[in-house]
Image 1 (tube, rainbow, N blue to C red):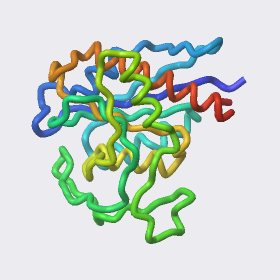
Image 2 (cartoon, rainbow, N blue to C red):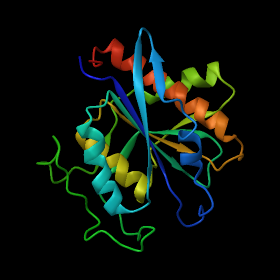
Image 3 (cartoon, rainbow, N blue to C red):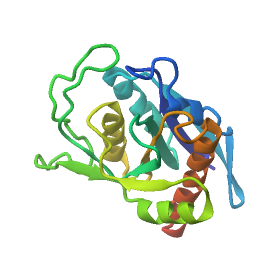
Image 4 (cartoon, rainbow, N blue to C red):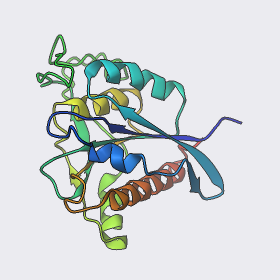
Length: 209
C-alpha cells in the first residue's frame, strides 16, 4: 500500500527577512504526522532557500514522492491576514533571487498539460479556496483571505512549478510577519486547518488514493 504523504514547504532568509522567515517558523512547528479520518499521513517539511536553482531542484524531488497534497508557504511583509493564493503567473520573473541570480527569461516554460499553450498566462489551483477561507473565518479567530496576487518572485515561481505538475493537489499560502498580528503557533494552526480542509475536498472528489 503506498505511503500517505503531505509535503509542506517554507522559505529561508531573504532580503528584509534575514533573521527569520515567518513561513518556515510556522511550517517547522507542524507535527510530523497528520491524522485525517482513519488515516495517518507523513507530514514532510522542507525549508527552501530563496533561489530559483533550489526551487528547480526541490520541486521534482517533492513530486517524485507522490504526495497526496503539497502546500507551499511564504511570507508577505505587507499583509495582516492568512492569504490563500488562487493562481500563479507564467511571466514577470525579473528580480534577482537571494543569490543575486536571475532567470534567463521572464517567461516560464511549462511542462504539464498546458505546455503546448504558448499563450497560457497563469495556472490556478483546483482547490476551492473560497470555501476554505469562509469556513476558517467562521471556525477560528484568524482572518483568512483569498488572493490572486502571489507575486512574481520565488513564491509565485514555486507555486507555478507545482501547479504545472498537479493543480488538484497544490496550494500556496501567504502568511504575515511573526506577531503582525499572529504568532508562529497561530499561523501553524491555520496551516494545519487548511491542510485538513484540502484533504476533505480531495476525499469528497475521490482524489485521495
